[in-house]
Image: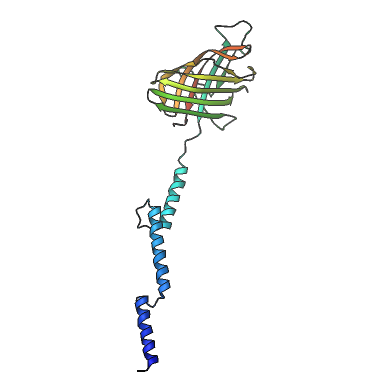
Length: 236
């Protein structure tokens, strides 16, 4: 056999060893292995490190789950409020209450025996942000309620640092504004809250309250009593 023919046979044998006799170029085989390894790693990441799944399929599944979760939202917050503003039982010299009257938000507004029909945030000029959450010894609550009464009076009621003992009573700082008051009046000390019919749970509360004083220094001083119903509030 000629030397040239031996060279061809030797070259074919060497190529079969390097290419595993598949007919593929060794470089192609290495690229395919790297791609396979990358795909397996992607599958492990997409499945929390468990591997064995298609990465793109897992990602699509995760994205779909995320979109479904975003749709699980609370309905808009709702609230009803009854307010009575009057002269303080403990007036100070040079102070007075400029607006002795009552206001109702709700159709009807809540009272101590009937929760009434709440207004919904975002409807007819109503804005409600509220929270009622569980704590170890009772509940924490807060609210910002703005609305317009049936006779066209704008009212704003703000409750902060609210807390209860069990499902019976509690306290909160209270601020109120109406056009007749001209300015915001705030309680210098926490107002007392009484839970009605033990109606308090994560996300909602029905309570009456009494503030001996709400003030707008230097001369504004009033007494404030009322009933408030909060529903569909944040629970955390």
